[in-house]
Length: 176
View (tube, rainbow, N blue to C red):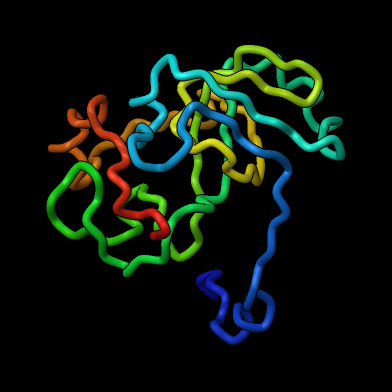
């Protein structure tokens, strides 16, 4: 019986490059990464908008029925980093896949934000931890029954998560 894991040559053949086209732009009061909250939980009450490009507006049908949405976006201002970096809330180098910083092999970010209202192609949102002008890749509805999981452990963050409300981007992952 096979394990279901694809063999390396097959992966290389079909996945040398993946391209995405932005479906919109995220707007926020943060004009640069430095000083931006590092998670939506640290951005409570901060308002922003999501501008969805006209060709995707039809896809917004029924989204106003959700109190929260998941924004998936491209960290367009982050720099390439090594696979071990010092995260915002710790002084020890950690593996990039054990943290949520913006500098990663594929600089993709996710944020769960409160959806306040929809006016044509503009989504009014709250708890925004995203730099103004960030390219939006996708939107998904947040559904607690799908998305909440009881976590038995939170790794190195367990002793640092209390720092979140005061933690802001200090510019370390930004393109110089």
